[in-house]
Length: 236
Length: 199
Image (cartoon, rainbow over all chains, first blue to last red; front, top):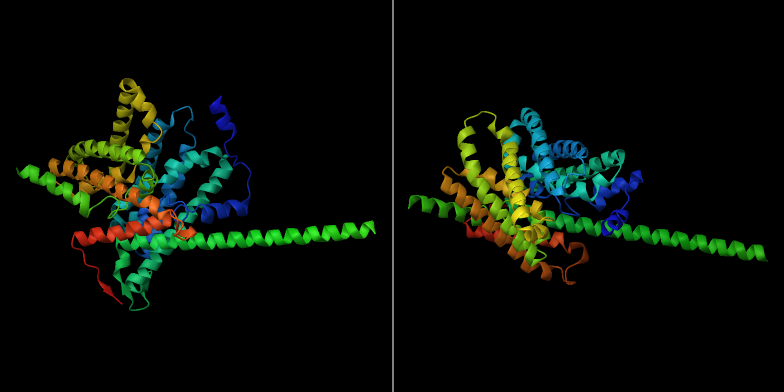
């Protein structure tokens, strides 16, 4: 009975709103800056623009294919065992992904090292699927997964580019200045940078949300006043 | 004696130099989540320790057998996942059959301590850094002990860093990240790391 009630109370994500869903995955529930679900590759490995791009590509290919494939795994299998299938599917998709990326970016893949295979254990596959994606219809889920992956990719590439600029004074290998603060290349630099980025992003998001709420309220008040004036005029 | 030294050396390196959270950021999101409650922190730490230690021993033999193969680095995650998966399913079955009370308690979050970047990361680092079975074992135990120590630090800081004195936007994950960053810097200093800051 309690279980049936729980299922009934599950959020229904089947309604589709392009702008809302786009903002949800990229900003409101960004998996690095807002929920912090996936952060190890960004903190440790994304130290240059190129590394950021490679991590984002690997994350996109592995996560997307794994989530879409595992959506066909029957829900009758208990979660404790279903999760083994998710991990196995992820590590199978890792093989063509790493072979492809090694051909295009051989040196960068070697430099990123163990953080590429670690993508198969990311929380987007293990947690977000159960709490969100697999409650949605297939088309909505398809869009949602892509948006969440884009949200991760943007943060990963921006962090990589920023760290490259601040550590080496270059962007995508092109020397721009002589600035060199090597501390940001290290894990502690990564943690502090991601923490500050997350705080600033949340502050900006909250500011924009409050401003929009105030604007909507002001608009409603004006409409209400207009309605009252026209009603009074009609009475007269 | 040499083997014991190898074991201790690998354990100390894993605990402090290659600390799962402060140096490697393995399983940070899970650690941040588990550090809120003492029970879940200990449960997760013990789970990670159990899986890492046993799978380190198993993967030692697999590494020795396949390390010469050209494409081993490509299939390594798949092989390690199979090992972890079998260990996880076997242990869960054992608990379900013989300790049903424990099974009810752990079934909700046991997967977090198994399919965790800390476990897989420990196995990958083992294959890169270590040679003998004693160093594999020491590294596995040391890394999970380091993970538990790091979670303990996060648990202590958790309440204080969620105070109203912290700006609302930084409360929670952002300030914890900055805190981990500062502790990470301290761990680097402990191991004799010098930053080369040239502005």
